[in-house]
Amino acid sequence: MLSKLIVGAVAATTLMSGVAFAQSSTVNGAAGGAVTGAIVGGPVGAAVGGVAGAVVGTAIDPPPQKVITYVREAPAPSARVVVKEKVVVGQPLPETVVVTPIPDDPTYAYAVVNDERVIVEPSSRKVIQVIK
View 1 (cartoon, rainbow, N blue to C red):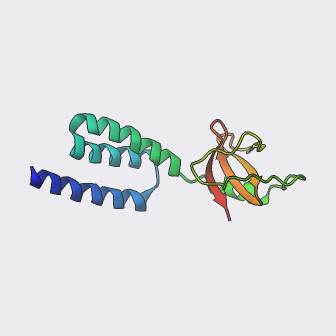
View 2 (view 1 turned 90 degrees about the horizontal axis):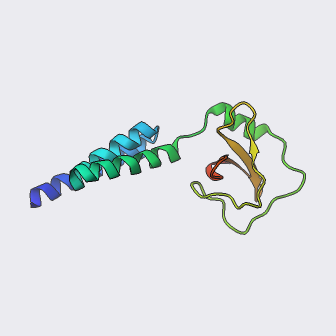
View 3 (view 1 turned 180 degrees about the horizontal axis):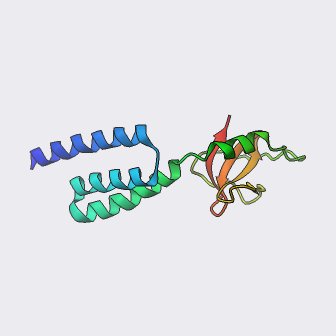
């Protein structure tokens, strides 16, 4: 029992460090989550870990460079938008913030909030990246 726990902890630590460095795709997230879940919780853990890993993997996929360039160069709105909440990656923007779709890539949108340009996922309004 103790050896399984140690092996599981070592494997989880190894996988988590790999996922932290890779952070490149939904596939990596799903695979890492499934393996970690299988080690810790068996078949049910693999299923739950795979789904959770896919969600995390999707959340960390960076937008294409052409989207980032478009958001950097797009004109700022004439009215300044200020919200009390801090703009955080992974959190949705308030409904009061106007989100503008990216013309060449409708899977992304952007907004300028608190003088920061942010790339968001249009349907959920979730912040994907803050442009510095």
